[in-house]
Length: 242
Image (cartoon, rainbow, N blue to C red; front, side, top):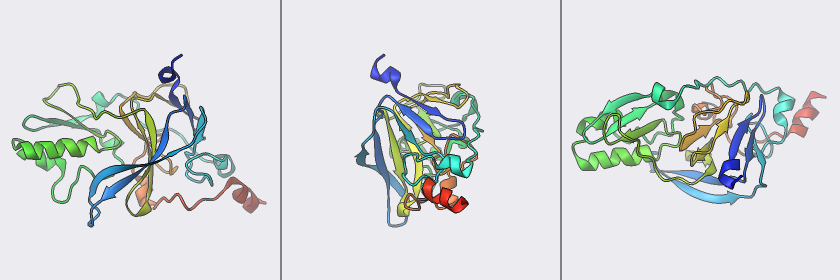
């Protein structure tokens, strides 16, 4: 098989994500304004991996973003609850002039590119006859990591997606907040029961362990103030149990 055919992510039952095919792993940091308005993503350092590697899903590993077995010590419940219907069946469509925006709210991780400083995309569509407004909408949607928002030039048209490489990005949001695993470039993801999720150009997977839409991120990391530096190793946890 070619490398692209080998590349995939498999969710283990109540365990981590197993990544096959040496998918590049890197860090990305959200760039915000002085008022914490979301602006863009900055690509950071690559993270060295083997051909196959394992990423934490419970949020408690002492070796984030990698798994160290802590999920087994704490009895992590990784039950997958996400709706497996395709994006096209779940989307809500909002038309503007020269643009049709689709949104699946269940996929939103609240990275806030769709909100903007003054008006959300849903309101901006009313003024999309102005090409500057329309361009602003397109740029914001392109920065949506989960692909919760997408757009076409007209209702029912072919979605226009940013050209993203096959990669997994460990996201950091404002003020050092640890965020999702951003999977790009149509990398297949398989549930713990072996069934494939819809392969999409942009997918965000939960790594704090508390999403109500597992394996997808639902923004809960924001509510619990999830941090990478707050590491508790499996050995430490086992010691506490003795």
